[in-house]
Length: 355
Image 1 (cartoon, rainbow, N blue to C red):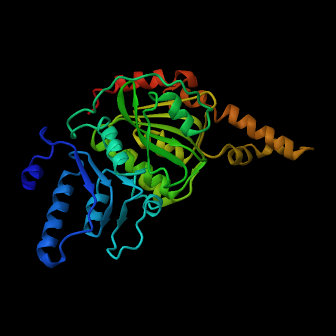
Image 2 (cartoon, rainbow, N blue to C red):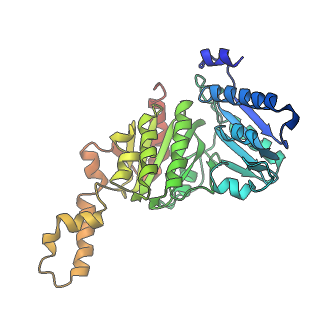
């Protein structure tokens, strides 16, 4: 009875739900009975949202009202044989379209691989919003990071081969997904471009809200200069600020203005913020700030181009360096890249009691 679940949304008997969709639809001659049945399923799925994780597997046709139920799941897995669309005329909704629109989190070859991927996800997720995610055995990663690519940083810091990326074909600027760190499940957001577009912000915000619902810690690797969409950036900032799960940020490169505030600052409600020695933290991009604030140093220059470059480098070294930010209390510590995994594990241990 959905009313019982709705009355006690956090009871421990609630368990994770996996829906597998492979049907051409309902019997049309049932008319209103069909509508009532679909509506009842939607209502129950909605009442469970945020109470238990929900996974949808699109193994074949998933059209019309079924697509609305599947799309409401926390994680959607779709095979190449699937069709995922609100229209029931058989047009559109292939894997490429669904992936590019952000409807699908994970894409696989066939229904068998979809089931395997769903099982893999289950090992990362708690049964409900009061249970902790399962702790598993782990191996340290042997990968090395280039210090720039978000993907390489994740591979080097997280447990070996544990990262599952969500919505890889949707949005430019952030990588988002689930991983294991010391056997513990964490949500991961990492900068991949200097400017994050609206879709990337939407992807990251959705992951943060999902993690917050089930008390999964969020680790963010920041290396970006700006956002390109005000509305999406605002939604992302709101997702971080609202989340009460443990949040740890590591500034690996640049973090200027709105990016710092949204992902690593007090406005994001971050519990712990670290920075690498190579990080650059500033209210404005140093290229702009140096010229605006120190323009008098360029007066009378015989080589303005070269002197301007030196001025910007000096500003970054003196005013935008992570040690100054740490001294002013805007990051908790400046750490070496090689220390990142250990520092994050210690911070997670410290925050384990956060509710």
